[in-house]
Length: 470
Image 1: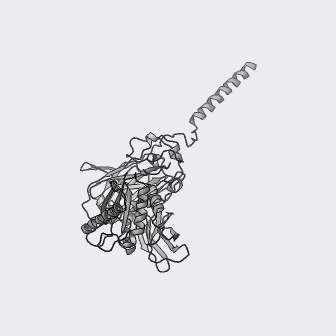
Image 2: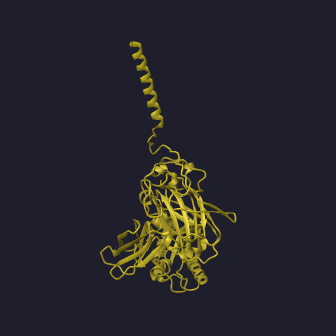
Image 3: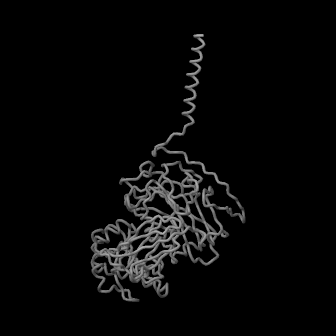
């Protein structure tokens, strides 16, 4: 009996030990952020239709595993193109989550294993190319520089056979934090820099990290970028030593969108100056999707604003632009107050600060008479400040670019803006500035920073830009 009890005790202990080990093997480990988790496998049934050698799929607004989607027969737009799978960087969505209706994603772990089958530039951590040794976020700290270079995202589709009347770009962006880490992202499509898109991206603060849909309306002057059926989208900060890592889940292009593409909300608010005076005629815009002018009492209403991360910006001649980022949800009525500060003097410090942060500065104090290309006498103070900056930064190579609004003939405006830029360069030469490394060009009405549909927008587009090119 004694030996029998010993035998049962041994068997019990062996069984208990085996069970505990087996349980340990089956219990998932809660990984720390610095541990690289395997990318979660996302499976979604989709319908593949092969027509004229072009793969078209039936898209849903939840998890979609396809890396490419194209249709001219959908209900969201006359032409709808998407690259990148709709899967939250491979982590999947929470139950009932609709990435197209304004919610933030849940906080997810990082870094993660890059899947080579993902569309180039999506579902991977990227770090701004100018980063060297500055304070950094988790994305930057827990990845290797060799694997985090920004990668452009290409989209290809059949060249549109229709007139382009509206273009909306939908981007599922993750962990952009310019306000925290001091990055200043540049946004290019086919090498054309779109600064009005940058003002949206550089207001994002997605700590967590979390992702959110960002929707941007393209200005009519940029519709030509989408006529060839091939676009290259680049997002990077090549100037500032900022440890800002970021990721992109997918990008979707809607040409001539219908009302079916968007969940809506509204934004109401008031614009005033620092003394509390209500400002009339301020141009207020929400991601370039909807815009309006403030009434006499400083109020504005933006209806049917597509949801997501919305940057509400206010612009008025004589004041600095101000912006406020808001997360707009479906059927939400957001209230916003914007305070405009009087515009800083365009002195040498202002020029230097703007160029160091953004790589360019827009100068509105260099004035010309209508149709003329010689700077007015009142422009001399700003020109002298520009000359002072160039004397103290002789090593940089810059381009002076003239811009106009859309009034008049486009070809004439382009020629006029080029003559104005050359006139500024000639003025600098007379001041003793070495112009060997100063180029001059004019874009006319083709590179606006605001809509030309209002006088306020036109005033913002009439400017002289100084841009660093090396």
